Image 1 (cartoon, rainbow over the protein chains, first blue to last red):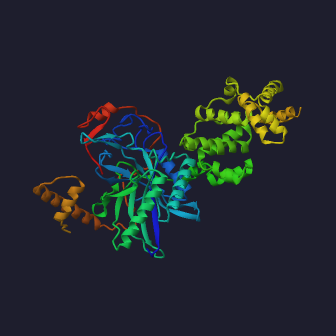
Image 2 (cartoon, each protein chain N blue to C red):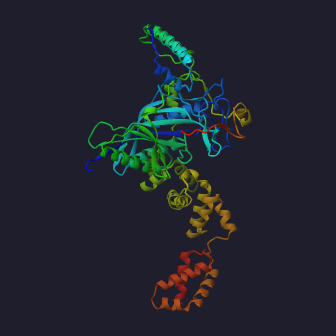
Image 3 (cartoon, rainbow over the protein chains, first blue to last red):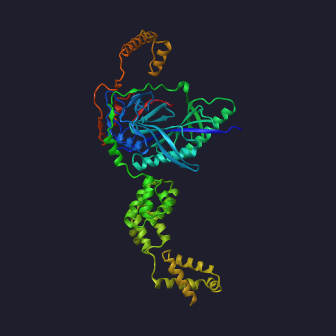
Length: 478
Length: 97
């Protein structure tokens, strides 16, 4: 292969909004209910039922649009997208084609190759579909409409990305914005954030786009990166062999790390969009936009600046902590209680991240309270427990949100600073280890470590290591 | 005027609407659609320069609900009208797309 190829990628990202109810009816959006327990005549498409728009959906969509520097469409409406599939009980999806809620925005991303803008073509509001479970034996499918009518915002980018790295950075940026705004939890695994990847390749230096394919069913950052690499290779191989790329939709199989053609352009669906007659237009006044703007919470860039000024923590710490809203909230709340920002930052960045990794958790999954982390930090500072005990106590705080004061009390974990008890233990250790004592006296500093270790073990780890070391030295001099 | 609907078009529209039409039904549908298109042509004779396209016949906008859960579990009722269902789900012919 001698030619150089450039990959051109655009994304369609679906974000499930964190409203309490569905977009057009008063059914709960709660995840994981028993099948069809969150349904009503509207979201099961019963004839004669009428949709009524959830105002919160419009405000969340506006918030997302504004945060991504979009223009809000001040006269905006819904359209019907017609298709037959049992996950969609009305035989049409209520979406937006002609006047989507937001247009012409951008977000800034940063990768190893620097900063760049990814332009947003548009954002539109629509409803989610139900879930089909296929019965392998019975030749039937079971339909659960609990997800039918859950509000989504689809964010369509311009074809501005050139690598898997840029795609991941873009998705992380969108996720961060949505989480900071509190409009979605954006969990790829649970499907509350989904991405379809449009990809084409072209010879480096050419202006014209190649034929693109669309890949669906990508539910992790890893799958997205692999699918992009795989599809790039597949298209280049076709071009090198003098063949053509066919415009088609492909489904990624994460287990086989391979994509399959789902449908080609020839049988592409004709959705016959038309204005939704059951919903009246939305007219968004300047005042309404101003209100939503005024309610926008502090986003990451502003938070970063404030942390450095207000808490005097290093840039690196501030960056790690503000990567997720949840972590930033924990940091602020804990610091507010104990007033020790740098120590709070350390506990979050070291022990919390370690345990999250061990348990395969994300910041959003954390359940311990700021009050209990603050107490733990105070216990260490007051010399009530030493740092190795503190790490063990934190594991309990992390897992069960225990009250560290009570836990330390009930399990007798207080650091022993009582010289009498220590002296007794050290005497026993010295007596039991004549060889190590002789080695130390003969100048082997290392031998002290062995005696320290024995003393700490005898004290069940609760002794103050500084005091033990000092007392050992003194007593060995005697 | 006098729009003509081809056999291919009526076939395609039938597929999109998931309708199986007999030959006589096809002919009748063609005649109906031709009349509809003729009527649209009549409308097109009007000069609509400067007139905002209308998507709704009522002069009403911003009809919203608040984000409050008002519906409970009504599964039994929802499943009652389904041609086929199990204890908790709608049952349809096996579909994979």
